Length: 292
Length: 280
Image (cartoon, rainbow over all chains, first blue to last red; front, side, top):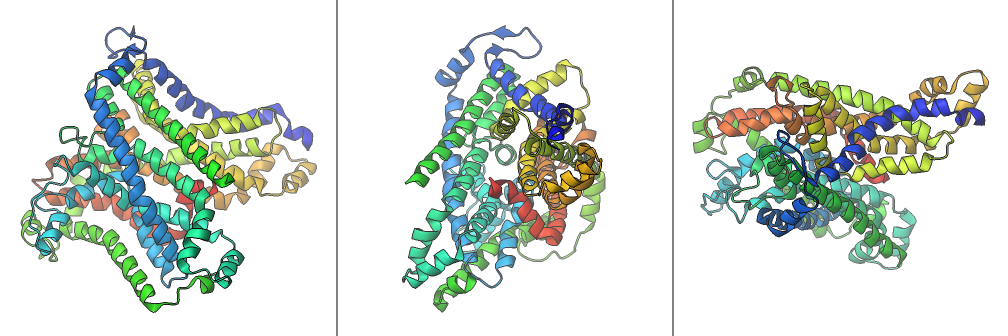
């Protein structure tokens, strides 16, 4: 048996197909993309090696890039603020033996199964200045407004962030619920016997024990917000006047609308560094807390 | 657990229920609003937004389905999702077996390398692949798209499946091998049937991932006949102001299959979609 488990041919047959497809479509293009960030090329003319010029231009001259960076950071932070506490609250309520737990969980999770495109188009309608649900509801309570939520520089970005939260809170809620289920019952019973009230139970027992799942949730929210594209593209296209421009939409415009493949690769490289960096950083942050 | 955790104060309980109900309405009401509006005429959408439609114009669904290529998009999406999920699940299960049961030197490093792929955003892949595709003269984006879908699903799938294989006793293959069965044959005949629950999980997870993709489709598909559902309906927004109902019906057509499948398989879908996160 042992000899068979070491058989080279069998190992290759099993692992190679997946590994080759993985290699061709993920690590290899990622490396090429970093290399392309050092050239200037529109795919028709000649490819020119320009060293770090793309990055110099990006950091020093491209003001839209900095708007996109600022908006992406706002996107990340507000997504986390909107989604995590709400998901924690909902998970906490539903894990305390509520009747109808399954029903509420299923309803709240429902939008997770929808596509970003469908949700974006739905909220495009909800936010519509004349026929949108939001302004119609506001009119019912006496606030008459024809504010175009997606067409206004002050509200466009947050309107998108809110839509994302509407879709994804249920996902993080379920992750938290799974975490709470894994907490040993004896621990909670013991705390109750020691006179722990609900509030203390939540903050001193459940919250610290949930840190590993909260970490996973944080990584997912941060990386998916950094990459956010679908909703921005469909709801605002980065507008008005770049008010909701994020890194992914800026990269798309530069690369596929303006055919600056080297420059677009530079933005993609920044995005990749941010994604990997934030994943590593969040993992570090939480590990040091676990040790304490 | 539930008994211990139940709050005793009835007022708090009522507040909790009210909160849950309001939250659920915030999820469901926009869906109903879109559904009702999709059955109305432009005039009605404008003048009586909260009323039920006076004439229930179900025909709009048939029109959108047939006239605007939506059925073509729909079938394309079914094709992309089915083919890429099938390929991904087969090769990932094989690889997961090779990466957990087999004994070789670089096993740990290979596994870690594949998991690193989870951190690479798709944005870093599309430019080189787009250029490669053009330079190689590929006019058919199907292979590239399926390749991308398969590749991006591989790390999570291997991760979930290998966790499951680890929990199986090795005696299963041992007894088969003693009876003269080859290892690969033993894998397909003995291990794969045992993997059924986890295969169901990764099928759901990956199918929804491909079905809901927009970014890859947007970049690689130019021909109308190749478009995915998500890509196809995104253009409805363009003539939204002239015919509200078209867009709204198109939204419902993409959402309704999700709702139907979800209402039958909620538990599997919820655990399937969160499997990668919860086990990580």
